[in-house]
Image (cartoon, rainbow over all chains, first blue to last red; front, side, top):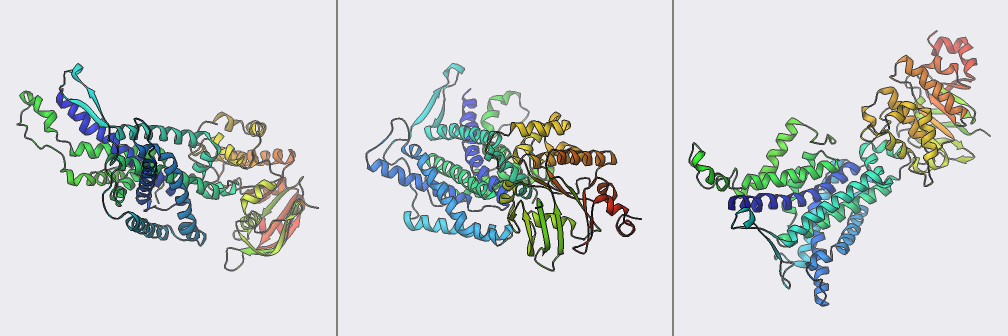
Length: 333
Length: 234
């Protein structure tokens, strides 16, 4: 049973955490693609920026001597950080992307512009915060949750950190709220309509400029949540989410570009696939040795840990070969 | 004063003008039909009214207001609705959601209009929770027209509503157009099935090379030997 608990800790919990980050990031990318038809490369840096905003707010709160029992300060300030990040996302659109759209720029022009925004955000973060690794837990402890498993006959505990638990719960809540928004509200439906057929949405009298603003608010808000939760789980660096922007894109494409539910499915699929691929299967196989025809050697991971990110792309290629528009039949362009 | 009046409208997509002086005037009680050969500027005239084509000279007056080069989000609240020829439903959304999108500009309770549309198109009511992309061509056309009616327009612009439909559906669509008109909505439509459409049109406009060639009641145009010879296939 020790082995099973090890599997839960290494694969299920890590996969759920990684999947949450990928899903929250991929939803933003897929919504922006659906509405504005371009790949928003700067999305990872929007996540990082959100995390730094939360970091500053948490620092201010700590300096004022305020704290909330049982919850990390970085998590407590999240609603405020989310609003600020959404506002900055709106500002970035107004300053850089909207003028290009007005001139009828091609999607690839917008993509290149977003690479420029990536460099700008990273530069600004390094200018103000330097390149050091920072932690949200310099003044408070990172709580660890242990679940005793002796009742199933294991000597190990199921272990995860409090930020990991909060991240998964927050993701579930955000996904549910997003689902209700897209399926029940007038604006949410208008967003789906514009993503489905922008010309017809305009002809129907839908206020497309408003839909664009709502898209940036949602994408920016979710990016802030994903970035902050990721920084709470690991640590805060200026290239925090830039490092995972490619698997996030892969998750959005695997799910079907423009499909919010696809992005969620794609995010968790890739999250679990990566943790399953680097898991050392000899741990689970060794107890079964008497019944196996071969000798179980140690180090039976499908890929070494340093190649973890490639797993996403292998899955991307496989999915696109089988279903060229992604699991949820997204846009093909 | 007509519900809508186009006077010497010239316009196009930026290059050489496609419309070279189009004149159209219809009342609320009218069913206006625009016919003519391919490339005559039939669909372009509708798009010019709806702000989707640039008007460089001439005027378009709707309900007493000049509307040339206004965008759809300004025109729909004034009482104009447009059903494009192609891609005229949100395929990934249910029929009911399609209709709701037609009512986007309305902040009042539109359940009456929804019931009216369902009355007019029983197959749409039956399939209201089904995705519009799963429907047949004729049923999609009903969803598209229903969507356009949800904003309670004074004038409905239809771009070839019978295109690609089987003869049975063509008649059904034309009968529906008459019903919508009787309910107090002016109709201006472009049709490929010229003779059939002119038969129930109160006003007909024959365009060629972006200009009016003949204008009259539907019956007059059908009876005119020159129109019949050149535009209605003899």
